[in-house]
Image (cartoon, rainbow, N blue to C red):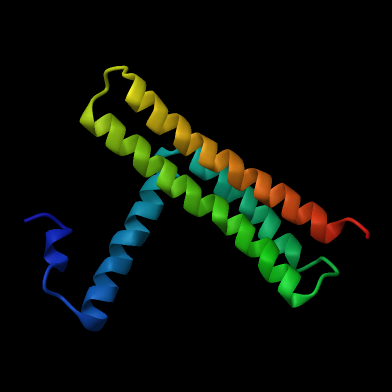
Length: 125
């Protein structure tokens, strides 16, 4: 029985606690093994505290933090896509390239959203 099948049939708080443990373990693994994920986390470690120093409303601060966390979410999905593609086959294949490149494109869009949002909120009207 693997670690994930142990969640089958569990409900309530016990399931949530186990799922949280697995999520934190994968977050740690992503940080350890994925350079792009580390870069995004470190950038956010600078950007998110900066929001507390800015003269913006709480809503604007929440938006700035949310778009930063969007990049973390997208990179987790991107890393998951890459892991699945590599698990299926390490051979070069056009569909594998498409899957990996689309994950990268999603991260590019997330970065554009961050830049645009920060500029819209921080630049004077």
